[in-house]
Each structure stands twice: as structure tokens, then as C-alpha cells.
Image (cartoon, rainbow, N blue to C red; front, top):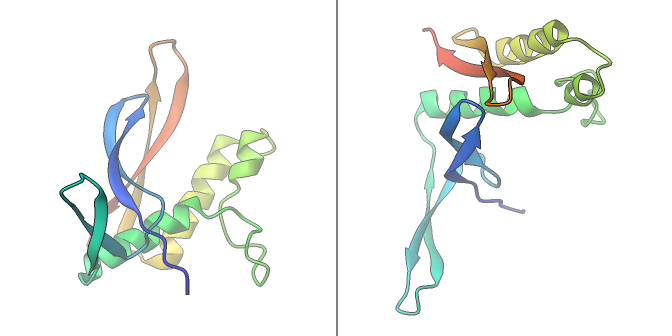
Length: 132
């Protein structure tokens, strides 16, 4: 079994800097220490055990899964590629995201907003919020 490790890191967004979880972990977080040579060493792992955290991860992953990647369910996922190629409009993309989260749980709501960068370009932004 392969295990990938994700870390939480600051990422620049059009709206400013936000902390996001970036590749490589779903529910296992590494415990990292440094040795006398200043090398980072994984000394253990912390598992997600809180139902809220597990649900949050499941919803976040549901919103990034590209439609057509699962050979057993080609209709499941978000049409990210189609949106980038302008084959679908933003409303359809928002519907995909909302439906993906609803399949995981009705207790999480997707909130959409637009942000504008310094050059006047508008970007769609979404956040997940527990409602129950």
C-alpha cells in the first residue's frame, strides 16, 4: 500500500494568502522533527479521528475529483477540464461542486464567491461550511 503525505502550507490566492492542505495525505498527517544535521525526519503519524475532520476531508476531496477518472464510475466527479476548456459554463461547474458535496453529506454547504486580482481578473472561489 502506498501512503502519500500532505502538509498544510501557505498558498497565495487572488484574495491573499490562505493555508491549504496540499498533496500528499488524506487522513494521515506526519509528525516531522529535525535532527542535529537539520534534516527533516518523519517520526510518526497522526490520524484523523474526529468525524468532523474526516467529513471535511471527504467533502474537500469530492470537490477536486475530475469527472471520468474512475473507470468504474465515469459519471462521478467535477468537470474541471471541461470548465477550463470553456465547454461548460460556471453555473454548471458550481452545480457539479454542490452535487459532489451533497453526495458526501447534507451537513456541509458550499459557499461561492468571486474575487478580483490586481489586474482586474475575476476568479470563482468556494468554501465548505458545516451547517449541522
